Amino acid sequence: MPVQVAGSAGRALTVTDIVDARRRTTHAAADLAGAKILSMSPARGVQTAFDLFGLAVEMLRTRMRRERPTLSDEELDTAVREWLRRRPGAEHGDCEGVRVTLPR
Image 1 (spheres, rainbow, N blue to C red):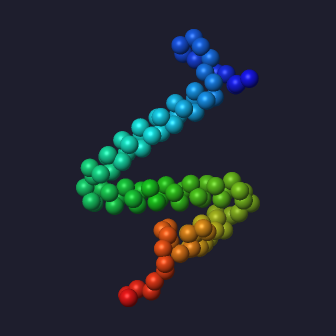
Image 2 (image 1 turned 180 degrees about the vertical axis):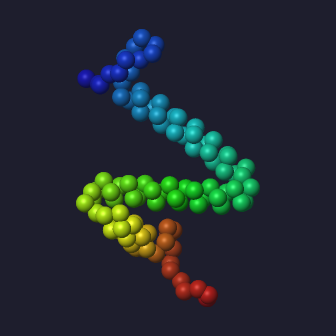
Image 3 (image 1 turned 60 degrees about the vertical axis):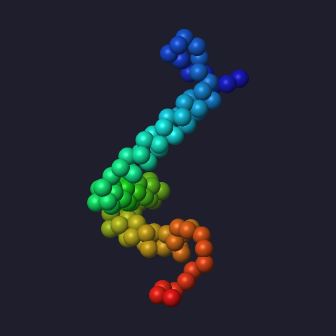
């Protein structure tokens, strides 16, 4: 039996209904965000990239704080910096291919 949530149209919504609506909303938001990014000036695009990086670091710090609540602020800062240096799972970059030494 599906989990039900009261719907605004008088019928019960299933979890599938909710997930489908979320997926449609997420895809629409991504399309809108993509169009907005393409219309930005190069300077605004770079600023947005830095802003997103800052947000990602804050999210990483929050996750690490939750996983290791006994760390001091200094130890947490060190752990975040070390994670950014190592980048587990992307030690050699974010793309596939053969590593080369530059300049060639």
